[in-house]
Image 1 (cartoon, helix red, strand yellow):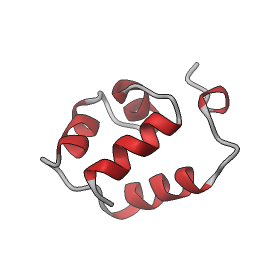
Image 2 (cartoon, rainbow, N blue to C red; image 1 turned 90 degrees about the horizontal axis):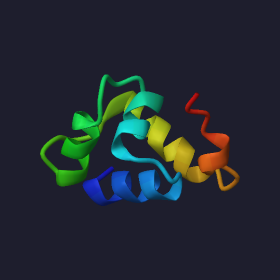
Image 3 (spheres, rainbow, N blue to C red; image 1 turned 45 degrees about the vertical axis):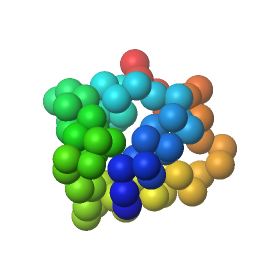
Amino acid sequence: MDKADVKRIRKKLGLTQNEMARILGLSDGLTVRRWESGARIVGGTTATLLRLLDAMPELDRKSTRLN
């Protein structure tokens, strides 16, 4: 998974970097920013989760509960 994939998936879901971080259980959006800039590589379980989210066409901002 490369930096463009991360950003594309986040945009597809209609999320900010901080919102995506919260959904993934991260403390803030810094890690997401680093993924999107290429400063850090997404791997392991997180990459798998992002691929699954990307493969779900019915998933959008309305279905990502941020409450």
